[in-house]
Image 1 (cartoon, helix red, strand yellow):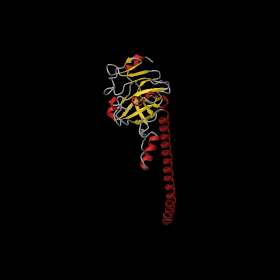
Image 2: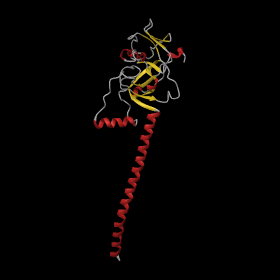
Image 3: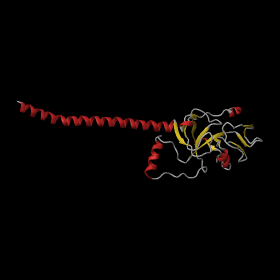
Image 4: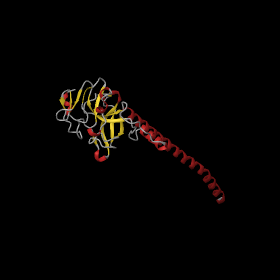
Length: 241
């Protein structure tokens, strides 16, 4: 009897081993399915957010100092102008209307492909070389002039005191333009280092199409010691809507 029991135990043990392996395999497959579902869902949500709601960008130059520093990371709301109007003083990201930027050079190889994918799904801030960040100075119908006796711009005959955000003098270019319908006149806060509307006056008075606007800069998210929301200045309120 003892010998039979031993043989029976051996048979049971050999039969239970495959069963345990199958059970472990099922657990692993179940975990993989759940993980893949979570990853796919997260990517889908990220793409939706990037496409319709918010998008992160690098600041590519010093043209917006001191408001924005080189390589700051900013968050742009795509909803701001879906349900509201563009206002003077807003900081916006817009696509190059043509001739404002040099032709971008893309990263090559595997690293470039990975960067493109991560940027597309919103895991990396956009740095395509085709977008700019500037401040809206004139909206359709505005007459924008430079400069007054105080070296400032005027909008619709009203001198604007921009000392709240402007870095340096504004008198690099003398101009007097009226913003056409459907377009905007934009300038960088770092006036001495900004190739903005003033330097493209021969092309539709230096204005950009409103259709090129990606969205409004609503937050500076990196570096952390500069984290803050972006609030439009109130100095343009004297002009009304």
